Image 1 (tube, rainbow, N blue to C red):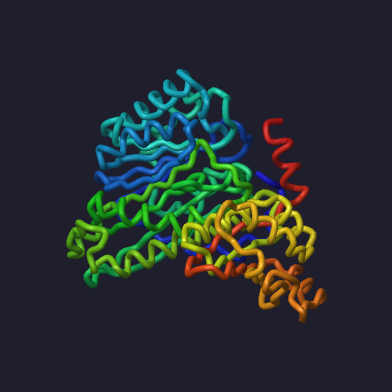
Image 2: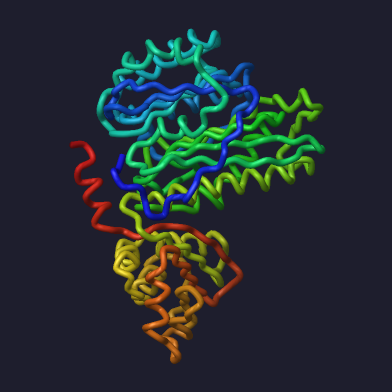
Length: 413
C-alpha cells in the first residue's frame, strides 16, 4: 500500500448502509503486510443468489477456478478474500490452499464448500499459506457485522492508496432496495470481463439468470472500459450477490433481466459499477491525472472501443499526459496502429473543448496556450472523430508516471 493517497482520490466516502442478509468481518493474518487487515469474510445468513464474471486470462488463479466451479450451483453462503498473495501459478499447492479455505469457511458457516466463493490478490507465483487465516474464520463468522463495508474494502487493498466503496438505492415494484459494492485495483488493470476484485451485494430478490444477465451487461461500459496499464490480471473476479431480504417487504422475485420491473435497479447497478470502475482508474499506480477518451465516427461501436483502448494503452500517450504535453501526434499514432479502419485525412482530435487537428492536419486556429491549459487539469477529456461511420465508445485511463515504475520495480521486495 502506497504511503501517499492518490491526488485523484474521492474527497469523502459515502455512508455505507447495512444490507440485510449479509455480515462481514476482517482479520490481520500477516500474509504479506504487517499491522493491517488482509482477510475478509462475507457471510450470508441465508443462501444468496450469485452471479459472477472472471478474467479471460489463460493463466487464471486457483480461486478463479474454484469460483467458476461453484457458480453452477447458483447459491452463496460465504466469501473469503485475502490480499498480499494472488494464489496464482501455484500448481497443486494452490488448489490445496483453496480447498482448505473453502473447507474451513464451510465449517464456520455450516454450509457446503461449493457455497463458498474465494478471491485472492497480490503476488503471483508464491504459495499461499492458507493455515494463516483458516483457523480464524470461525471467530470471524461469529463476530461478523453488517455495518462494516469500509473496513471490508480496506482489507482487500494491495497497492491501492484508498478503499473503494459505493452505494445506491432503487425500487423494484415500488419496494426500496439497496446495492453496496467494494472494489480493489490499482495496477495490472485492463479488465477483460471483470475487474481486479469487486464484490457487490443487494437485498433485492432476483433470480440467478436475471442477476447474471444484469452483471454481464453492466461490466461492458464500466469495468471493461477502463485500463491502467493494459495488463489483464490472472485473478479478475467480480461477484454480485442478491440476499433476497426485500421479499419480506413484498418485493416479488424477478426472473428475467429484461423484466421492466428491473429498469430502475439496472440503472442504479450500472451507475454503481461505473463509480467503482472509475475509482480504480483514479487510483492507478502513480496516477496524477485521469483521461477520458471518446471515439466517434468509427465503423462500429466495437471498432470505436478498440481505437479508444489503443489510445488509452499507449505508453507514449500516457507519458505525454504525465508531462502535460499536448502531443496530439501520439493520438494519431495510436489510431493508426489500432488495426481498425481509419482515414488519415478525415481525423479530428480535441483536447477538452480545444480542437487541435481537423481534416487530417493541425487545426488552423490551434492555440498551444489553450491546449496546455487543458493538459494541466487533473481530468482530461480527449475526443477523436474518425469520420467514417456511427460507431462510438468511451474508455478511461490514467497517466503513466515515474511512480508507476517505482511501485512495480519494488513490488516483490
